[in-house]
Length: 299
Image (cartoon, rainbow, N blue to C red; front, side, top):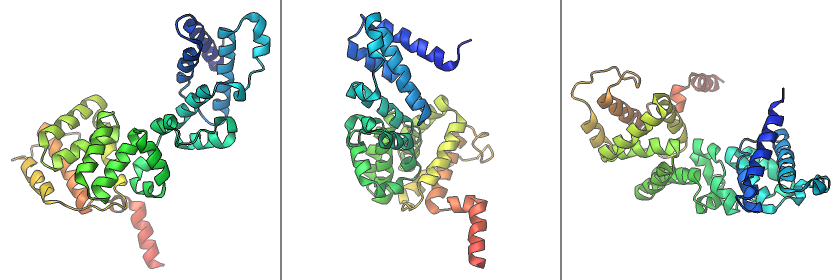
């Protein structure tokens, strides 16, 4: 039986061969590279380069030229092909991207390259938007390239830290419409909080239908963590919206899995309201952090 790498190589050769006659030489390379989307640095990354070279040789060269073509190295690959592959690495993990550009001069595509910046994974900054203040050049490059994560981080910072509600909601809306999971949740909840209840409910309902209750629960936890070191305050409109959304009779226990549609949205508003007044801050919710603070006081 063939191992996974042999099967993957055979698949790539078949796909590359199929592209001959249908697309140009360069387009075939691009499509093939785009299918190598799961990289692990450094072993699987280098194996994927080797696999791509073999597929390219077998599909695009005659038998007479294959021996000479096997001498092809990473340095001799077309620059745009290397850029596509590095962008795929960056889209998967920012850490793997930085490891890749440090490991080889042939892979050194800076994050101010628009093609790289547009897809670069900024998950560490999504989890802690306040950290983006330390990486302004990175954020500026990604934001100018319309990176989805950068739009989310900028929206959170503008809304909560700079208190620019209009601009913050604009960037969060951009992230939400682009399919950013956390962006969809935050934008929907904020719409409910500022009185645009029907629009917010539609976004939350669509998110829940597509991703499930568990995904929404994870979004609540991630949103709570993302507010770390940001300025939170209770606006009058929050109180008004919270009061209007409260059911006449809360018919279900205050838990996300048991709530009806009316209680469900009020539950999400309750979670948001408590975040704003600090009742469910990470320090209060994490027993280990509470124990650590007690130990520090005793010391």
